[in-house]
Length: 533
Image 1: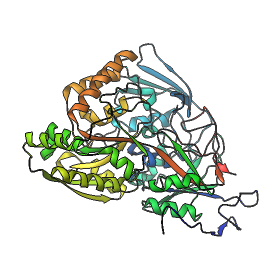
Image 2: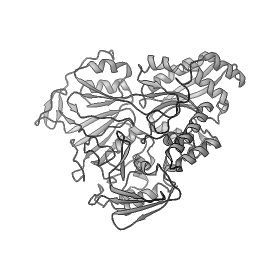
Image 3: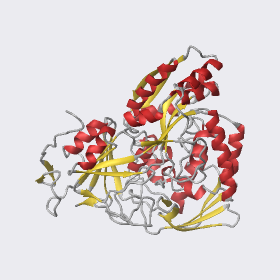
Image 4: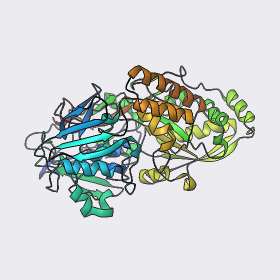
């Protein structure tokens, strides 16, 4: 059946003891008790400390919360589990006053001791923490009474408060962690404070959460939310049109234009700060040579792939950072141009006139048309005598490959995307180009290393003057661009599709949505409520 013209099936769904058409307006007598969302990937962990990707973070956001939140519309920090905070004049001491009367789902109190436990856990080498480097400035964490936490840093860190809004720093119940032991990553029973309670994870199939009747904030609309793992974008769309799910993340790009006109479907779109790139292992074979990496950038016609495979749901990048981020600097107008002649010249200079062969991995269901565009990239590389052997795997296995230390890594080149929850260049520059972030200590399996870039990033991370930070970021971006540890592709657009009677769905530039709607009191609140029409 064509994806452009899909027959809408009138499916009778048994919900709450009543039969209702999936697209019929919901009434007080026929409101589905369960919201079903189709996502492209399974989780690799349900431990917030180990989260590596926004989609998984979005799912666990339903049952965990952070001390403070980040309002992407205003680029400002807002209260969540902490109601207020103070920063000392020297920028080294942060004092948080916690929200009173909040309990974890296991009934234990969310207090200063629990916050201390959570943050110290991020520094524990025995715990897998993908972004540990963001929290190493913490020198001491003190519980001052029941509702006050004092954090002292070893050096000023302008981005520290923003880093506490990231999924990694979500507060967990010490009792739940102790009970679960090694199973905490797969069964965090009772560990969160959020609007929903974790109930079940069926690996490769679904994650189920249920409404928290004792939630401290605005009560959620839905009794249950289930995240269905559906890697194939076409299947996600079919399930949506059949009424089997109510929201689908990233349905097929070729269908988006038609879906915008479909009276039975809502398409919600927003600009995204996610950069999509081809990460090359800079310590492997031909990719050790910057000329080869530059040749890879010239050999790929990014605009053609965007037009033919992604249907223009992306914009070619001209810098490692994107315009929405503080410190962005446009390095090259229009990005690396498509120039296969230049690519062949650089390959010859590097000693690869006859090309070379390598393994190329791409996920399925994580990014827009990810495996499809990887195949198009491989086809284009053959024009310059480079043979890329493309393969895919499920997301948890993919993440496992990315975080494997260099001595055992399979990474030669991979498709990857990076969207930082805070609109600041530090996230991408530190997270991807600082040598401390090589696996297993971070998520930068390019193994790129430049001492000057490390120095620039270190200075920017502790520099309070905004203009000086911009100058440091500018030099770092220019150096990285010229040394080409990646093939720089595009920033993708972001969209979801929903059934018509689901309203109030809002997505943001960091590619998240939420079911809550209380503005100004948490990390994901918006002025809208996701609910049934």
